Image (tube, rainbow, N blue to C red; front, side):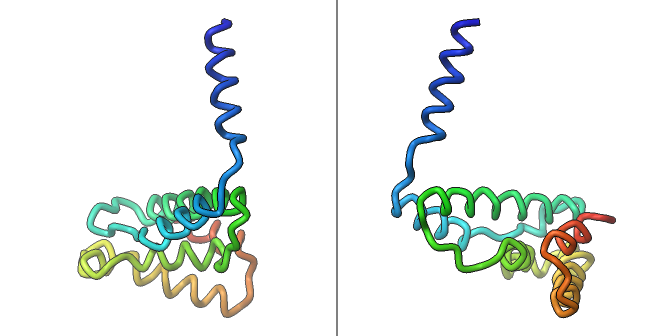
Length: 124
């Protein structure tokens, strides 16, 4: 009852806390440091969903902080799916990573909407 209401009020207040430019800069830096660890990926759709969620979370923080967002969600997801050097040597990258990156590049060439492309990435 009352205790849960109090906890929810605290959470709501903290989520409304205004973010500084520094918070926005930190969110951007953390996003730039992220990549898909293809050695741990079990399903390509899982990798895409995780990448999209991470990008949307970072963009939301950047936006709340009034920090300028340079890249689209799709561009960031594509970058995250590229993985790092170790991930690109994994069987999962060979099986799915290259394919997802190439498919995305092709869809962008045909100027499909970002939402359509992201949805297509998770449909197996």
